[in-house]
Structure formats: structure tokens, C-alpha cells
Amino acid sequence: MIIAIDGPAASGKGTLARRIAETYELRHLDTGLTYRAVAAALLAQGLPLGDEKIAIEIARNLDLAKMDKAVLSAHEVGEAASRVAVLGALREELVRLQKDFAQTPPGAVLDGRDIGTVVCPDASVKLFITASPEARARRRTAEMVSKGQEAEFSSVLDDLKRRDARDSERTVAPMKQAADAHLLDTTEMDIETAFQAAVDIIETARKS
Image (tube, rainbow, N blue to C red):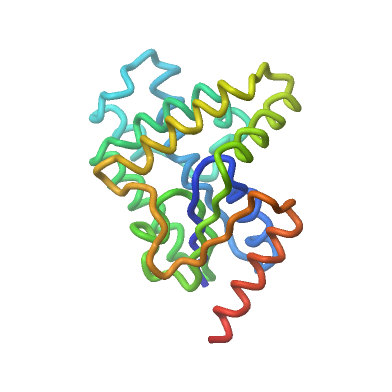
């Protein structure tokens, strides 16, 4: 079973993906971390984010088991990842890694922005998780503050809107809801409500 979960930043898709993977005893991959890992390596070496040749070399040596979410979740890494994600040849390399992960038995839960449309177009179940920009900005601001980071709501909101625009308007694998994906708007939901709604969708799809 392969479950594809897409959606914009801070929509709750990552938390839901982890919970769903645990519930169905499947492996989980946050595909955004693969782009973040490449971006973090470029930043650490002081290399330009647009250097696709070096980015691809980094991707080819990427160990999915060793990606440190705590390190890669840094705000500046996320911004850099959104910029390297527009590199077409790099995306092809990372999508290959992601496809291999998904197709390894017994299956997996993958979350990102192009899972249902590009990485796993034949997924057993597809979810598109979204929420209003304001709700997502509040969540991201609270998350950053809880980690001791400085965060201003208006700045976070502006950053999210810029990332949304980059992700949805890029020419290669733009973020969009797959035609057969189930839309789940979490704007007014807490995580438990959203999780139950997602499980209900998955169970209905499995029985059909």
C-alpha cells in the first residue's frame, strides 16, 4: 500500500503522514527533507543554490536513513530548499530515489508537493492537505517560538505565501492537487480531528 500526501508548508501533512505510517505499519518519507538535505549541503559548503551539477552529485550520494529532521527543519534551509526544488535535473534524481523508496515492500507513506502527481501517480490513496495561509502561519510561528526561535507572524505569513507561489508556479512538477486526490482542509481542525478524517478517507478508499 502506498499513500501519497501532498500540500503546502505547515498544512499538517507531515504530522499526519507520520501518524498514518505508524497506524498502518508502513515506512514514511518526508520527501521535502531530500530537497532540504541537498540545500543544506550547498549552504554548508558555501556553494550557489543554482549549481545543478553539484546539487545532483549531492543527491546521488544522499542516504535517506541519515537525514536529520531537526537540523534540516531550520527556516533558512527551508527557504533554500524551495529554490533548489525548481532545478529540473535535480528533481529527476530525487524523484528516482523517492520512487524506489515507495515501491519497496510492504509500501510507504510519502508526503511532499508532487507525490500524487509525479512520484506516486498510482498510489493506493492520495490526500491533498491544505489550510488557509493565516492558519498555517500561526502554526509555523508557534512551532518556531516553541523551539526558542524568533518568529513574527507577518514575516512567516509572507514567507509562506512566497513559497506557495514558487511551489505552485514552477514549470517542473508544480504543487497541485491530483485529480483523484481527496482534499482535506485542516484550517479549523486540531491534529486529532484531522488524523481521524484522514483515516476515514483511507479506510473508505481501501474498501472501494
